[in-house]
Length: 427
Image (cartoon, rainbow, N blue to C red; front, side, top):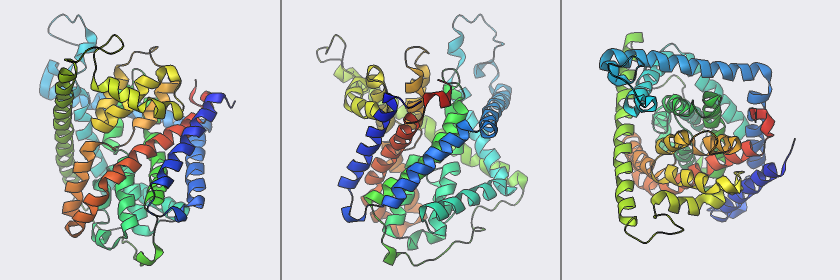
């Protein structure tokens, strides 16, 4: 049943499109057909995945697979670190079982295993077929050329820098609009390795967390394409029709080679995630210490989280969050933008059941599921400087706008989900 809160989400969707149109480099080229098609595609995917019994059962299977992957990972972690990994069998009395969940031992190792598994599935051509299938869909439904379409699909599963690697030889010949699109889509999605990590974090507070996280990353890609095309419209004269050989790049010598290289790549990602979290959380703690010296406001000390909550509360409300949850949801949006989505998901997972409505928790899962944050700006500049050094200056000039597009793309996805009947998600 359509309720007032569903219309509330539509207001947010319209406002986001309006803001992007106002900031467009050419407001006369608003892609009306793409806007209707992208939003309709998102809605159809959500309705199909959660409304069709067979597909819903498949998503439930994803949750079971994530649980199995997490438990298998813990077996490896326990073998290396013993009781430090947080196993139930501890050599001392445990007064606070929740303290056994240590991020470094429960989440980061999942990234290692998923990266290794992804490399193996790519070598076996399973992931390659899936990626090419999604690339074909993006090409035919959203008007993308073959190379950007494949890179967009790869980004959904592999990550914001790993995706463009598949078309590295074509990056120099992409139009400015296409290059901007790749960066924006990269920031609007997450990688397969982090999907599993987020689902692990939210497992205790969000039913069917894995299904929501997987759906969020997939359906945010069309939103990223749409907002990128609005902000930097395509120029057909700059697109010469070159296509991509889908067999290029990402070649492993054997299954063992794939596992080893995938593990090495996963280690680099895990170290980057861990180091980034340490530094950014430390910076926020320092800023909060400084803010704590000022007089209290509304009976509580100032903090980065409170300030961000006030700034982003209207945006959170506009995408469908009830007003009583808006300050908390706004704070999560701000934390995602300033700190990283990992930190935001950790904070979302730490909010006890009952302190946040089920509707808010689902909407925020979709709104947070993207790489659009300040840290990703540096990652994209560094990554594209290696992939296509001759366009480094161009990347620097558009990367902040791409972060803006990626941030709002996940909000578009959240608004589309908020416009759906709550019963679809078992609420």
